[in-house]
Length: 198
Image (tube, rainbow, N blue to C red; front, side, top):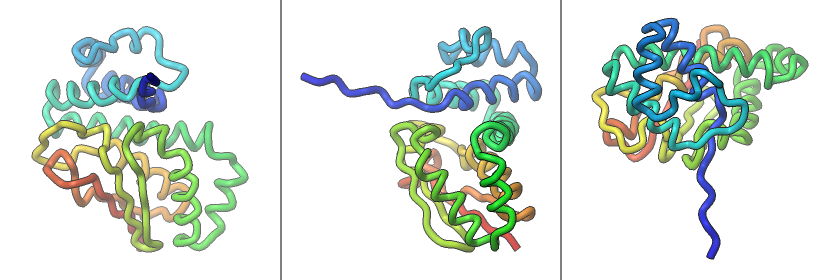
């Protein structure tokens, strides 16, 4: 009988949260929250390969529980912004970036989303990523790992909002704005986002 393979997520989901926690709340908060999530070892030796989705789910639970929704959202925003910077510096070729900046924004946005969709498994794990529209763009993450089994008072996917907003502002339109319009943490069927620009 075959055994199910555990879902994986890229290491930036913990590396950048650790850096953001250090910057926003201090190292003691990082040590406490990563310890409560059972992944304190990542602080001493940041992962270099894909990590268990369950580690990311637990980290975001502990982040909200330890800091409250408002402060955890601030940390997630910084982490998402840094993740986008990492992608721009290491994962999106300079030639592709140049090409996207020269295209009309709706076309550049469509191409960028196609590329993101092909690699969505690296940040959604077992969740499902879909998108539609040209302007505004809408994307959905079903079974989102950031708020899975969570109950929140406000949208809980600030990490994704910050990552997408930074990428779109850099590669599509300088005034791109991303909003999470529905969140599974608040009882929605899926986490839904809107990207628009002037």
